[in-house]
Amino acid sequence: MDIFLQQAINEAKKGQEEGGIPIGSVIVYDGNVLGTGHNKRVQKGSVVLHAEMDALENAGRQPAFVYKNCILYTTLSPCPMCTGAILLYGIPKVVIGENKTYLGSEKLLVENGVDVIVVNDSECIQMMEDFIKNNSELWNEDIGV
Image (cartoon, rainbow, N blue to C red; front, side, top):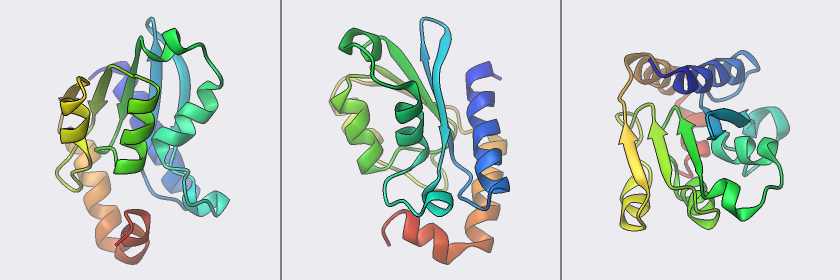
């Protein structure tokens, strides 16, 4: 397994241990981790702190060329909000742990020239299947249902 996807999975587990939603993300620039994050909507009472948004926040303010040369790893297919941030900052490649439990806006990413790689990792799938089964109301809130 890719070490950066494993880091995203570790972030997802951290989020779940904190009582949140198990989704993690890592932003990599030139082979180095620029920022990591996990969904903190529950922990912070936030409406926008999805894993990808948290990783971007933790990566901090960077020159545009940095983001235009990053790879974003996420355990789950990015929602429309996170897809918008990926497009806004020009991140050219996204590696997705799984899209079986939730298919986000991958088509929009591809239509805008982003290289999208879906791994469909069994650990990512199982983590989300278990979470959705046991926390359907919270999950529906997270995706705006």
